[in-house]
Length: 238
Image (cartoon, rainbow, N blue to C red; front, top):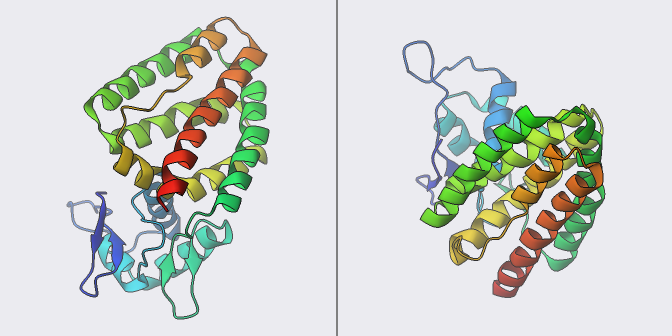
């Protein structure tokens, strides 16, 4: 799946195919796969806030009929990641200072708690895997590769969070990431990656030391640094 493209009407769509056995688009793809494709597009910022998409465009890009796309869109919209307008147009909600503040507060409440719950199950092997991801993140920052950074940053955080085994908090956090992912991509696209500073190494060290509170603090620090940068650069620009 590549970045946003415009359809014939100048509206945004996501580019990507779900290959079948012979490499052609798989027409009978299940709704769940369409929903995962939409979520991935949101998490990595392939939708632009405020720019509309169409059901027809999305179905064409994914190589499926409109039905599974319509159903998947309703599910994603229920989590406030997308808006379905009365005229049928679909778009990522524009970010406001109030909405951003609520997302930040929710992240600071939920994500450090997931880290605390995950800490007892994480060991040196997990730390090594996370360190490898972080090394790739550092390379993407040096290269200015925003798309790779977005993908790997999500992988790093959810490698930790998924270890918590939460069936309640984890889905809530996933919904929050869907809501700020497109805004994050837009801001980093303007700003570049040079100003990005993370607390991933502190998180890895905390896991190696089996220090639950240090891991939670590293996650909270990472959220504050990243979201402050987004607020200062993105909300000011808007």
